[in-house]
Length: 217
Image (spheres, rainbow, N blue to C red):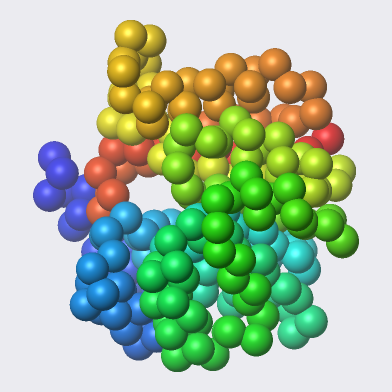
C-alpha cells in the first residue's frame, strides 16, 4: 500500500504543483549536508502555503526549521510586508536553511533564531502571530501550542505535524518520548478551552501520519 500512497502523491504533484527548481535544490542541498529527510512532502507544503494564505497571515511563526523546505512554502504565502520567524535548535541546520532561503529568494522575509525552542519562544514579543506551524521535537508539542496561544490572537491558526505516528498515538503504554509527547498534546487540546481543534490522518510520501489543525478562539 505504501507504494500506492507514493504514486498518488506523485500524481498530485504532477497535476497540481509541477516542478519547482528552488524547492528541488533545497532538498538536494539538505541531502548533501546530511540533514535527515523529514521535511513535509510537496503536497503538504502546498497545503501549508494555502492555509497561510486563507488565514491572511502577515506574521508567521514556525517551530522547527530543519533545512527550510516548509519555511520557503510559508514565506511564499506572505504579503510583501510580511515576516516569518522560524526557530531551529541545530546551528548546522540553520546554516543550510539560510543557503536555501537565499536561493529561493525569500530570505528577506525570514528571521531564523537558533537555540532551544522553549528559550526562543520565551524571548519573543511584539505583534501577534497569525499562523503557527509546529514541526519540532514532539516531546515539547503541548508547550509549543501553549506558547503559540500566548503569542497569537483570536483567530490565529495553529498546525502541528506528525501527530498520528502510524497509529502509535493509540499506544498508552509506549515508552517512545515522541508518542508520549503527542498524547500529552491531545490531552492538552482536549482540555484547553482557548482552542477549537481537530486532527486529520494523512497518507502519502510521508507514509501514515497526520496533523492537528487548531484555531485560537
